[in-house]
Length: 367
Image (cartoon, rainbow, N blue to C red; front, side):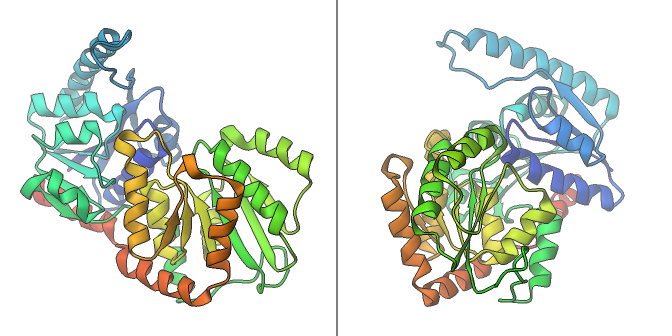
């Protein structure tokens, strides 16, 4: 069996696609990743040992915008290139996680009659997946709320999560938490801040203020600023001085991220589906500051679903202030019973074998 995996533009699309690709390869399937030359998927696929075929793609602009015609011409050109590559490789199926990078690949699959399975991670579908669902054989979703957008084709499978994280969560053994990495006391309350793959200036500023104003010997902070924001965070830290037991990182590799999740009592994050599901996997409640410019404000809707489960507090970015973040943080910090209830609810909700479920759907479609 030969499978093309596509999806990209941002890490939120790429990493779930890669996880399905890795699992497919482990089952003896030949896998290739088709994506954008300008996205992160080329580096990520090559790092995972998966052959990559790239095309010059860019987000599709509205037809009446200054770049609208250019983007349409670019899509037609990259779709033609994808058809040539696909005819040569003769895949049995295409699996897509959406994003602009997937559009030419899905268009080529439609023209050539290659079966398509798509994964929609948000409660409100993105443009690419919404269009592709018209000819897809199956649609996999994370949130029940997404089912209504796809009719009878859709089923809840959960989010493909990195194997390293799934294994770390399984080895955690319930409420077990390892000792602090610096050899200090595990009695400290550990707060983890994640600004997303690109970082968030607003969230980073508010979190640093929080850690500076309330930090004591009873607290520990890990601030993952994002690669693009790390230098700005470092300069801000120099100005205010480092709080007690505070560490700043540009990003965390999977192993270090798993260790941070195993230790965290509370997270302060954006609300991409990937991080929401990773937190749920470890039973970590969060204070969520959704990215306000996401398509159809889907991060806000995602976060509100988790909040209704009892797993977090939502602060829209327009309402984010250090005072508001501090108040939300204190509510969780001072209520251990609430944190335990949130942890239980999150772990009941998350689907741990999403990758295997999706793989089974792909093989069923090919048969």
